[in-house]
Length: 280
Image (cartoon, rainbow, N blue to C red; front, side, top):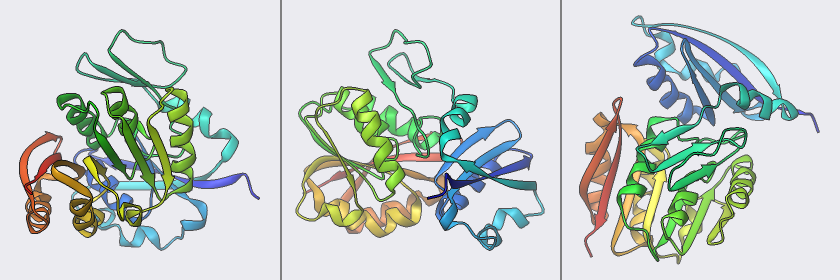
């Protein structure tokens, strides 16, 4: 087996915003799994076996006359991944309550200290969507709740949910790297109530939860919201993110069809995270 398992594409974006956010959204739908935001653009990562030169032809913003976007790529060897992240990964803090950091950062004085080594997984807390989902968890009661973290990535949302009192958490992701990474991070944070699963929306059959967290992307959410609704208990809460303010009407319409009522939203640089309530 080759040590080279991922392709890194460095996109230089001028001007960086809002083009970088749009680019991340499009790349996510095209199969890219992880992103590192930089001053001049982004680094994007995709599994080598999923890469082809045709993938970027479908990324519309690359041909936009409003932005100048250049890119070059290189192969990333598995054993060099941790060193790559150490170069770019900075600890982040949500209010005065929670910090998401790597093992090589100093321990903070906050109630919720989450230590992760993200490797190839999405969900470091740096992207607006993960940041807002963490805010939702901090703002709501998770004591003795059954929680699903769908598209769990690093497992950071599941970890905070347990820290906030959840007594049963399923972290589900269909990517093998994310599955392995979440297992490692759950152990690193000494979590006892989290089960990590390599699966997709089919895992939800016959499952019931008080809270579902789904930080994925618009198209997957639109396809899977009916399954989330079936898996929610009466008065259960659904928190979703991975889309823009302009997409709220589409998401809310699909939620409404499934018996989920809009409650509130958070916004961060045009990205949104929305809370829905199962009415019955």
